[in-house]
Length: 101
Figure 1 (cartoon, one colour):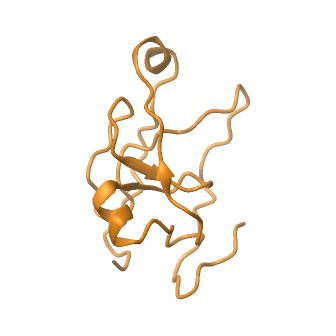
Figure 2: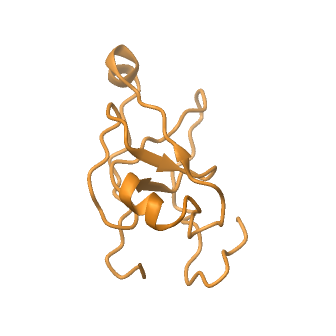
């Protein structure tokens, strides 16, 4: 489990399913901070190395640092066309209303 970020009140979720096939991004469907939709085939999502996912506005407000693990938030690549059809994005939403801003 990653170390807790300074001031963090929760840990990285460990209930994420483990894949047995080729490693690929989950392409989470929403911002963990505000809940806005983040389609896999559209730009504007930012992720850390643990795939915590945030929209551009929240990543900017967080100064491009993940509040969960303290890692750097970087642009998430898009997945389109046949790649998206063969490897659909995750459907489990990670936004938590009680999470501090």
